Length: 280
Length: 266
Image (cartoon, rainbow over all chains, first blue to last red; front, side):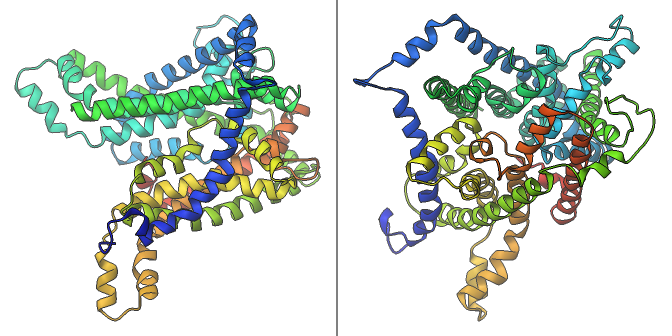
């Protein structure tokens, strides 16, 4: 490797060729083609399909549904996941194992299985309803299945591990003596949290939020099972236009919008993570 | 301890408890429903029964779809392990420009919407004349399993001391033998965890597979979702319980071989 500094004569680089060729031919090119075709009109490049899409108020509703649910799911995951990842990092052996099992086991189980389970949990006679009536929050049993609250609960449940694990990976690296040093110097707990702990955990939060938000934007199976056709998101609309409506034009348009959203989340969170990394 | 600190600790332990209960709920509910006699998902079940398990054998399409899924997952994981390991070696040991961008590109299928990847591939495969469902599934699933292998093997190789291979050669090993005796055992845990997660991701995939199934070739998630939509009864819960058991076995194996804490590395 040291024999030649020329990038094209490095023989080790050749080992990357099979995987790269595979992905370029069967993944990158098809995606680029989908992108290019969505701008292709009968007479050259056009923004027509996008103009048509955004001219329809129903489609604005679809975009708002998609982003609204994703924001709620991300918030729920963050509120539970942020303190939970501290617990995971600082728990004793027994609780840590319980937490790890509770986080990793669902990761190895399919989304169809979990979404089906939430169909049962969210029924009028389901567990959530029984508990809420039992502790007196609800007067009578209610159905959460096929409501937006039910969708947010189910999706937050399925994506929660993806919030906890990235935050845990930075929390476990924080030296507890930093907090003690702050306390010795007379800083209040709130000040210590805001000035020491929170900034150190932000890279983990950014990557957890990016994971959960982008997965919530693109989820397809979960809304199909938990809310149904009356509530369309970009993802379900894309699936429906290809699988049931045979409307490839609409499907390609929404697919490209979804793709643009996903890429901007990846690029944006990467940029934010680098900025946070360089400032600390 | 001040009041604020007490509040923070309370929040932390409450969140831990909520997390465990919240995340285990769907699994516990699935197992309970599958073992109950009620056909309308009454919980707690009025009576215990194995009737939904007895139905499994006669459920149409279940066994073929399970076999299809297992074959696709095993084949695509094997291909991904081969391609991904070679590529990870190039990325760690190579001295060519753009290695970081290449790594991001290889992991990107995990971050983009599966449905969009599926549609793009469907049109791409049509263009090159690939129409056969099973082959399409195999080819498509390598794209989803490859990122897991590249990510984990890359991380493991970054920590590997390559001078150990030179040491083995100095001590008289041939180069291939040195690789087999030193590098392969060191990468064992990475092969295992990435292979396991890749296999499970393939078994679980819905949004890409949906475009490559036909009336004869269906994967398990596609078949299951079809049952859920057509006649939801606890038979699905019985299948799900089987998959939960599979996950438990995978978790125990992973814990024995690499440890739970390592599996939580992200």
